[in-house]
Length: 274
Picture 1 (tube, helix red, strand yellow):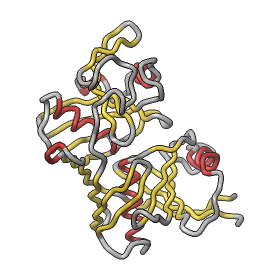
Picture 2 (tube, rainbow, N blue to C red):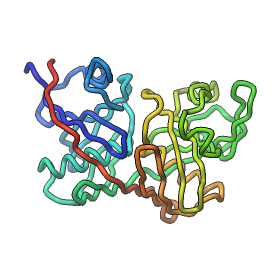
Picture 3 (tube, rainbow, N blue to C red):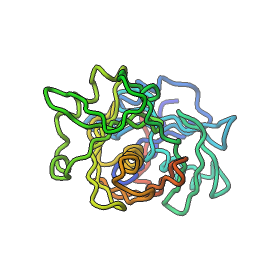
Picture 4 (cartoon, helix red, strand yellow):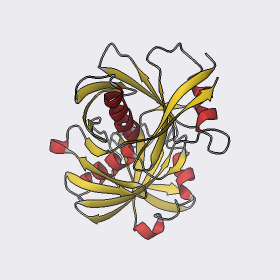
């Protein structure tokens, strides 16, 4: 094989290279991810998605960050759901997807998908966080001589959510994001999501994603923001969550599984030399 077929997709500005690896041999996916996601010498994207067969669900998704690390991704989940339905990998509008953190349900309508996410956890042991509390909710974390009140949410990937006025982060992600991501309290890098509560039904966020840096949108970040706002008494169980790239509808019915609804679009297709 001299060329690898790929499809470029985006979900509210979070862009991905998708490889339909249904019948492909195993490859060095982390190394390929690094080269394919590079924006100046590669295709350019916020991550690589692999579509694979599954013995637990209708299809399987693997997602790699631009640095080659494997992770979970909400916008990527919607993108792979829309692709799989349009490509005929699944024959129904409703189907299941095996992911990095379990099996998820998806419902596809044209270029939009409604997907179930994980039931969130605020427990320090699940995040994980080396903090002397059971749940990390509105916790005063010292970072570079300043105190940031964080709510740590595990939504398949860990997010430290910080509430702040939009003008402090909407245009430029605060430089403290990297310090928080690498804080000694966290044994592994975390995602940092800045959130402005405009109303109980409307949030604005920006996320510094581990393995990727600042992105135009983050699906798991939107989920983390809604449940963090809810648990802190700042929002209801359903809200529109906006990022610079677009808006998602996030629901947390009965504080169980999070539900995310939003668009996913094919941008172009191409071939990558291997």
